[in-house]
Image 1 (tube, rainbow, N blue to C red):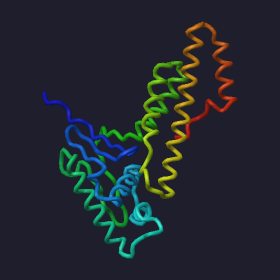
Image 2 (image 1 turned 30 degrees about the vertical axis):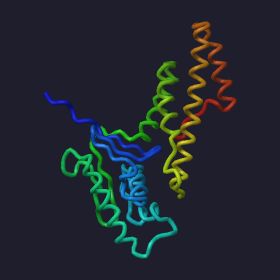
Image 3 (image 1 turned 135 degrees about the vertical axis):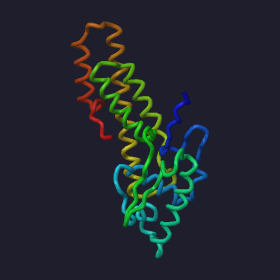
Length: 216
């Protein structure tokens, strides 16, 4: 029985990259600045359609070129050529073009670092409710490590700033969960039956703004 194909891994936080087994596409191999911006935007909005004018705004902002409509065709064409390097079958990883819009298609099991960090926050929240503090700490570390990498360093645009704010909120939430879990483990280590003290701790953290709901 043959080994299963390795998953496609997409890195948006820190340096852009794609990885699938031995096939790796590094940021320097992306089709220039326009290609990097277009790719990041398409991945972030992969669960819906992206209008051509919306994508153009994400790439150029107020510096929209006169012939942007034809220029964007070239950007997408170069991205499609790049994606063939991590395809296992024709069209498995593709940017589908429809009238006035695009949609990114990825294979099942694709791992995107930003989504992995967001899932880690939810897992940490679940672990906290279940008093599974080792799991909380492990998942919070995942979220912290990914969110701390930054996003499209050197680029500025409203959508980029919004993504950075979301990553900062994720870091703060993960830090809060880490503090809560560490303190809870220490309390339970001293006295596993001291549930009243643990409840007081959680209320104090919440009152101080340490415990909060995720904004991710």
